[in-house]
Length: 275
Image (tube, rainbow, N blue to C red; front, side, top):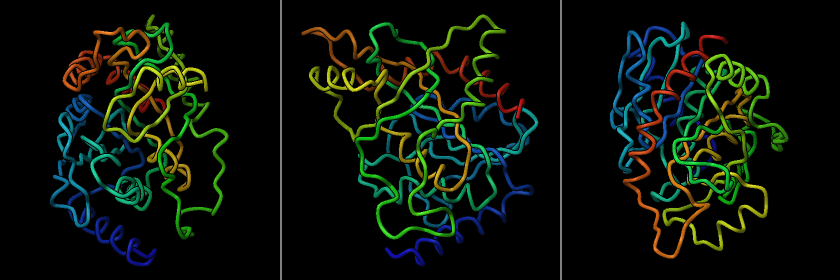
């Protein structure tokens, strides 16, 4: 697909969305596996099923409900994806990141991303929340191909993809509540298989603290589009302590994410209110 056709599809999706909403959002939120409950906190909410939006992919993963919410959260106009798209579902990287381009065209300036992740750092435990300080990408880069000049430069800087300003603010809010947060590096893999023990050891060696199958493409495209990003992982399984008879399970991931959702929801809401 050439850039002209892709941009036309983005703008057709934007035009449809604008017929459903009254105010353009300035804050975007991507909710990962089992974390969709944050959408319930949005006031004056308008929900648009993905399947109704022109050219929008449809999520096929358990725990991803497939709705786009618009409304007010923390005093800000927000749009929230209740479920995201993954490369392992068979989508191209342009399809995976299509919603981020739509956000940019709607006027989103700040993006909050969340995900369920496996612990690589040996000090992490199930239920921990990790502020993402940086990432390691093992997936195809979503910017491969002709550059979309309408959004950003050919070679966007990625030395600081996750906002240090928002990370400091989140830590301050957590300190005020007596809430312990981890801070670490997220490595994004293609999935859908969970990693081998040797791969976990490799990720630890190259500096990763947590591993998952999403987020990184969205962040790259957001930064290419000039959007400030804050990211947080819920540690839902312990890759760092797998024994011979211990296996990762997708249902366990969703259940662990749901247990930590209330804390993440409250933190996101307060952080958005502080913008």
